[in-house]
Amino acid sequence: MAATPVIACRAVHKDYATDAGVLHALAGIDLTVLPGEFVAIMGPSGSGKSTLMNVLGCLDVPTSGQYLLAGADVGTLDDDALARLRNRTIGFVFQGFNLLARATLEDNVALPLVYGRVGAAERGARARAVLEQVGLSQYARSYPNKISGGQQQRVAIARALVTRPALVLADEPTGNLDSQTSREIMELFTGLNRAGMTLVVVTHEVDVAAFAHRLVQLRDGLIHYDGPVPAPYRKAS
Image (cartoon, rainbow, N blue to C red):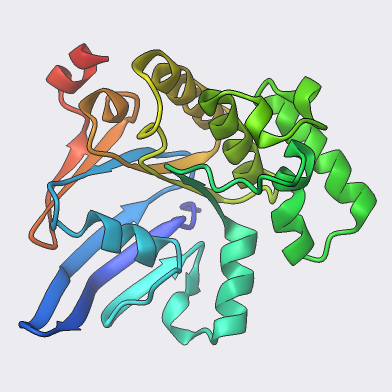
């Protein structure tokens, strides 16, 4: 039996009303991502990649078309059901880390489990386990301002993993990092993918996309290319 796609977009459109008229941010996206894939999404400014990321992350809904997340039709869900699906199914990693300055690293990582109503003891155990997974268990009781930017992004990755999601969505995850730290973060993603995690990374950096197995390039709200990462990208890594 074929595996259920983690992501299945069918003729997805997303329109926005502006003073200049209707903006067609997504103009008919067909995209399928299977369990265990590592996909990079690229495109110039205005291509629709941020809008697509928001739709894939259930932070926005299509104007038309269908989006199935782990088999669930997002368009049929009310706000509460959508929030539950998002919390259970997706781990998010953002460029800005988004850590709470006054919370310990352990508490930052455990935060999604609070929303999922997981008990305190289990929250702590799971947070410490994923901090160990990203190599930061010794800093569990430290605070974000006591660690480096690269370590903060590792904490953000641990937070994304703590709910045991089917999918990790990363939006410019190396945008605030130097080249060496960026490579270390992408090598961490590579290890997670080898362990079976499904990853979708939005990036404008060729050397980041080089770590993926599949490249999706957007232009004018449409998929312009969907296939293996080209050899020149891999040379850049």
